[in-house]
Image (cartoon, rainbow, N blue to C red; front, side, top):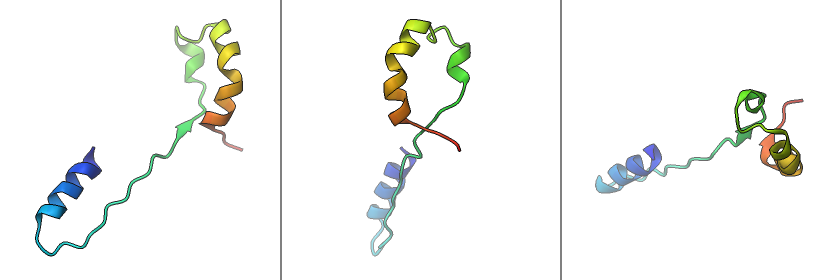
Length: 59
């Protein structure tokens, strides 16, 4: 949202040739889900194959 507003303001200025680029760093695989009510075992088993491809892993 900050990048959208910054782009809007820069485009409003005459002669501004600045380009704003942003990227999402991704999701990080932490152990926080272990301590949440949503971390029920059936949900973990169903989502485990997909979580490998979605979350970043530290090596």
